[in-house]
Amino acid sequence: MREIEAAVVRGPEEHAVESVTLDDPEPGEVLVDVRATGVCHTDYHAYTSEDIDVPVVLGHEGAGVVESVGDGVSNVEPGDHVVLWVLPSCGDCEYCRSGRPYLCQARRETRGQMMDGTHRLSQNGEPINHFYAQSSFASMAVVPERQVVPVADDVPFEIGALLGCGVTTGLGAVSNITDVDGGETVAVFGCGGVGAGAVLAANAVSAGTIVAVDLDADTLDTMAEIGATHPVNAGEEDPVERIEELTGGVDYAFECIGAPQTVQQAIASLKPGGTAAITGTSNTPPAEIDLGRFTKGISVVGNIVGFTQPRVDIPRYVRMYQNGDLDLDAILTRRYELEELDEAFAALDAGEVIRSVVQFEKGA
Ligand SMILES: [Zn+2]
Ligand SMILES: [Zn+2]
Image (cartoon, rainbow, N blue to C red):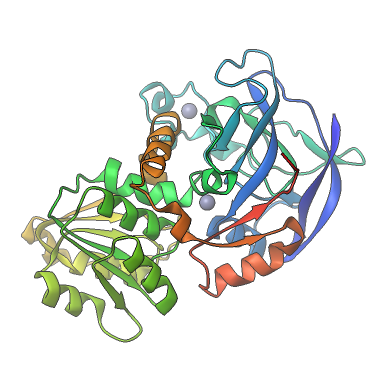
C-alpha cells in the first residue's frame, strides 16, 4: 500500500490532484510507475458526464515502468517499460477464448472497479473508482496483466502513451478491419487521435490517395505532413463532393469521430464495392443511411479499438515507429503536467490538439 498523487474527479468538470491510497497488486495485476498518459475524448466524455460514478480517477492510455507484480504474473517483471492498453478483458469468456478480447463483455459488469469487483484506490478508507481498470491520471497505477504490454526501453514514454487506445484504434481500423493495399484510395473523416492513426497506417501501406477531412486547418496541415495527399476542410467545402471529384469515390472510408453526419458522409463517399469502417465513439446518436447505396455492393463494418490484440499489435506499431514508418512524433501536439488536466481537456474540446499527453517527471 502506498500514497500516490492522482487527479480525482468528484463531479462533472470538477477535479483536483489529491493524495490517495493505492493498494498492492493482486494476483494477475501489475503495479506501474506511470510516466505519461494520453488525454483522450473518452476521458473528456467521462469528465463532463453526469452518468459516471464518482469519485473516480480517469486516464486509460498510460505508459511507464513496472514497479512490482502480483502472484502469477509472467508477462512482465519489475523494471520493464510498458504500454497500458485501454480495454480490460476477462480471459475466459467465449470472446476472450476465441482470440477476440476486444469483444469481452465481462468488463461491462465492473463499473468503476477492477475485474474482480474490488478497488485498489481509496482515500481515508473510502473507495475511489477506477476507469478501464487503469486510472492512469495518477503517479502510479495497478493494472491487470492482460492490459500491460512490454516495449523496448528506448521507446519514449509519451510515444508509448499514444499507443494505448485512440491512435492504435485508427491504426487497427486500417490494418485489422480492412485490407488497404498500395495504390488504393482512402478517406478519413475526423483527424483526432483515431483519424491520425488511420492516416498513418494508410500511408504506411502506400495507399494511392489519402483524403483527410477535418474542420481544423492546423490539424489538416499535420495530416499532410504524415501522409494525407489531399486535406479537405469540411467547414469550407462539401467533403463528399470533393472526394467524388478527386477519386470518383474511395475504396475505403474511415469514420473516426462518431457523429451521424460523418457516418453518412463516409458511406456516401464510397465507390461501388467500397468499404466504410465506422470507428467513432460509442456515444453516437442514430444516423440515417441511404439504403440504396447497398445496391452498389458497399460494405459497412464496425469495430471497437480497431480489433487490436495489444500484445501482438502494439509491439508491431513500436517497430514501425522505430523504423520511421509511423511518424507518431508529428501528432503529439502538446504536453501537460497532471495539474494542467483542465487545460488539456479544454484544448481537446476546442479541437486544438491531435494528441496530447500528461507527463510525470520523475528523473531517470
Ligand atoms: Zn482513449
Ligand atoms: Zn472475456
